Image (cartoon, rainbow, N blue to C red; front, side):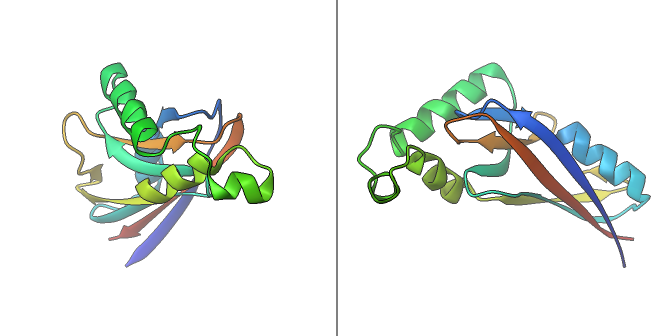
Length: 139
């Protein structure tokens, strides 16, 4: 069993930005030389998340609309009241989606569906520099 790690660094505009990480994850996997195993993708920070989806404009718009309905930005969130802050919605959305995803791989290729990409969701209410860790574990 071997482990190979890589970092993906990016700046986002925040405010619900959805960034396709798939090629970056593929690049880390390719450098690993591993053929079969699992790749974990983890974002540092409590206002961002990682998931998979069909990364196309309609899907992105629908996801953003759904999350606004589930966790409205303009609610009187206790986090904002107690901390004189404005990004409680970002923390809550990130908690719901989660900070990581695991993607299996075989023959050195991610086992993603045809229309499935690994994406970063940045919910913060301002631009941010993000670091995503990719760990490939396998043989």
